[in-house]
Length: 241
Image 1 (cartoon, rainbow, N blue to C red):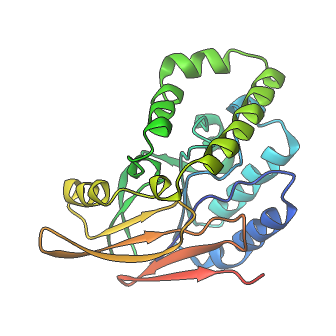
Image 2 (image 1 turned 30 degrees about the vertical axis):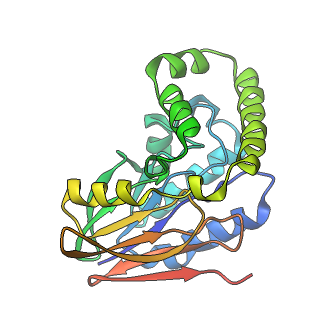
């Protein structure tokens, strides 16, 4: 009963190394798992399920569909870059869309799964933008535009985001400790798995007298990697360059 977790792959045609690493992962380690959980930002950006006709998007969806067809359950969660992934993509990928947060029994015990951006509560400006972008009104207006216009708008937002991030203190873009404790307390679990911050590793903490742990998944801007849960144990694997 082995479950694997990845996030922040940021797949795009312009990053062939990450793409190759992902396809190799799907053909290798992922085939030996009971389930694969993609905890957000599978794509560098997603402008709507009607862009599934794009050859690159179709290849990624097809690769996941092939994995699910082999008997591995595939779960996908929205990230801050691909929160417009919908039912059509999941159907094409043979995947189940998870709410954020979600509790899943993985590796023999329950784990709280999140993308991780909602834990970064010190980044007030980002949280305000997130509320806007997740609103039905904003998404209806955005998805009503032609594909080309949407792509230009998203690429402009991505460039602006890079500039904003460079100007922010690094600490406000990490998780807030109180938010982490509250999430574990609210869901009554001892293990949290998330991505988003690009700071992979294990963090031990105590919440209301309970020993807990927080696992942060690696991003795939570098070598990439994944977390495996099996038999109640967790192991973080990072790919070599």
